[in-house]
Each structure stands twice: as structure tokens, then as C-alpha cells.
Image (cartoon, rainbow, N blue to C red):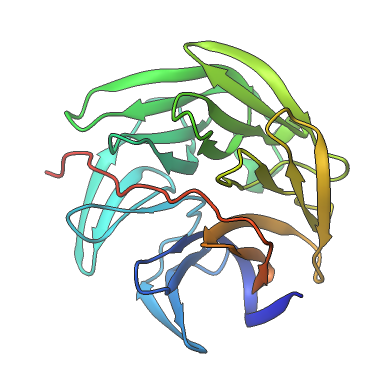
Length: 259
């Protein structure tokens, strides 16, 4: 059963569940990062817009996307990565070693520009930046399979999820409706995908077959995150939760070096 936990104006995105059960998320259009706990919601980071991805850092604070990849902990903020020719960064995830994997934007979605081929880059704990996947039109949600070697990437402009392993890519699944936005992976290898304008979340089995779809009120569904078997869902204007009967894979803390 879906429960609406919070509502506001703007596009909510990038949910992250903290160790105490708090849910942190961004507001892409209105700006800022917020924390929801026990029915209360308060601001964590002010003003910054366009945050499509968040991850906790092992030293405290968060790694977040936007026009650059940035670390923020209260008033302490540092740019971690910017790329010439990129319009910004979208969603991200963290590998088992603490490396950050982040999708690069090379068009301006808010201006209505068409998506062009782009890439996912990896920043490892030594600060070395490499390309993890290429030729992806509007990379969005990311997450690792239980083998910790297969990276799933939502290719938003094509409405599908790409599986990347050892530099090779294949189509893993295609959205039954809408687009493929944020995603999360469960312990059985199932991939839960926010379907954007499809107003739902879909689960695909480990072999890419559509297993189930959860309709979500309120229009655009942007992202998902797990806390045990509770799935948190962000949409245009709302934060939701529902118990889905399978546990999600925990996401490690980022260990990229800080200035």
C-alpha cells in the first residue's frame, strides 16, 4: 500500500536512506536538499537546483550532482568534478569500493534540447576519473547488480535500461510505458525503475523480464530508493513509501577524495 509522506511544489528526486532511517532527497526545480524523518521534513542544503543524484560520503556530508559534481556538508562545499562541454551531471551511484559513477549531461533538458550521446564516468577513491560507459542518450538512474560488476544505467531518451559489464553494453529492459528514470536494485537482482511520465515504478527480474508495476498518483515518477523492503518513491511534488516484500541492496558510502 502506498503512503504519501510529504508533498510540496517542484520535482522531487535523488532519494537516499540514511542509517537512522531518515530519507534525504532533492527538489530539482525549487532547489535544495531535504531530510524527512518521523513525519517531519527540513532543509539540509539550500538553493542548489538541478540535483538529480545524491550519495552519502564516508566522511560525512553528501556527493551531489547539478552543474558540477560537488561535495557538501553544511556550509562546507567543494567541486569534485567538472567536464568541459558538459551541461551538468544527472544521477549517480556508488560502487562497492566507494567509487562514484555519475551520468554526464551534454544537452540542456530544461531548454528542450534533444538528447545527444553521452557517457557515465567513474571517480575512484584515488580521484582518478575514467569512462565507464559511452554512447548513452541522457544517462539517468544507476545501480549495481548483486555481482557488483554489472552496472545498470537508465537511458532516459530511449526508454530503456542498459547493462554495462567490462566495457560491454547490452539492452537489459525496456519501459512498458513512459521513460526510464531513477532505479534501484534488490537482493534478488531485480531492478526497480521509475517510469517518469508513465506514472509508475516497474520491477524487472534479473533476466530483464517485466515482473510488476506499481501505479503512483500524481504524474511524473522520478526515482526510487530502498530501506530494507520499504521502497521510497519520489515524484513531481511528493515523497511516497510502500513495502514491496523484497529487500533492496544497500548503497555504500562514497570514498572519493575531498579537497
